[in-house]
Length: 120
Image 1 (spheres, rainbow, N blue to C red):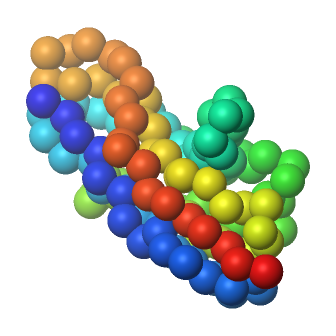
Image 2: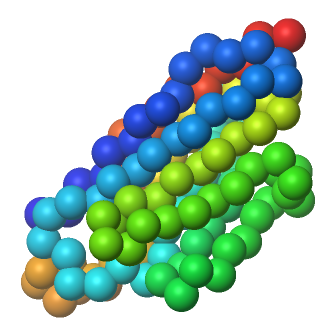
């Protein structure tokens, strides 16, 4: 089985920074990409940032210049450095992985989410 575990969320003042981590573990043959999404209660989950196995990155326009995604392939871990936090960044942040598992099925996996709350 495969699990994704996020960490690093919390309460921070506007203008502050956080670093989120997501570690994938279990029976993994290959990870193609890992992504961060976020969701506010009552709204759809939205893409925030992604990184593929080659290191190429992609960001939502709303976070460009403030968020930086990075990865450690050896540890199957992805990080999201969040700077200049705004109250509108408040959300549950979810990690997502596109991978082939030990049964040779390629599918998406999700973490349980980590809460980020930004106070004004």
